[in-house]
View 1 (cartoon, rainbow, N blue to C red):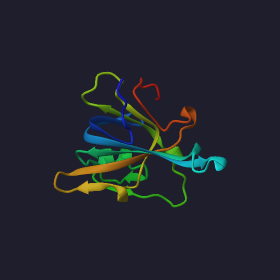
View 2: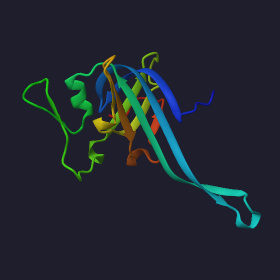
View 3: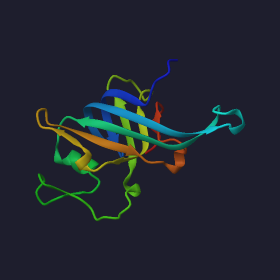
Length: 168
């Protein structure tokens, strides 16, 4: 079995599910994972590494949506409201409100994959605000950033590659 570098993993075209809602097929997704360690040196041995402590970890996925439609935006914009016209969307929320309760399961299913073996799961994903998104006017795509939060049921993991969709 080959080792896979998950610090910057290009998943290619995927079918994206957020909160078990099928957001459809999309141009591509990129997963980025990072860990920050503090090194502990043995004082009586000079600069010899004795141990290290994991200080922080982060996981985020950037998904490129092919079409910008109100229904899709309303689903991933957790602080949005459809106005009386189905073609208008109001974005925003009150300040100082915790967002953790709005985080949901994000599943990315590569379109060339059969079954769940290559699926990527962020157990508690939170889409980041639209001002951090990238809109490309030439091909009408939007890149949406999802960040993983720690999920108490799947400690210590932020995400998983492979497996069966059992988190509904």
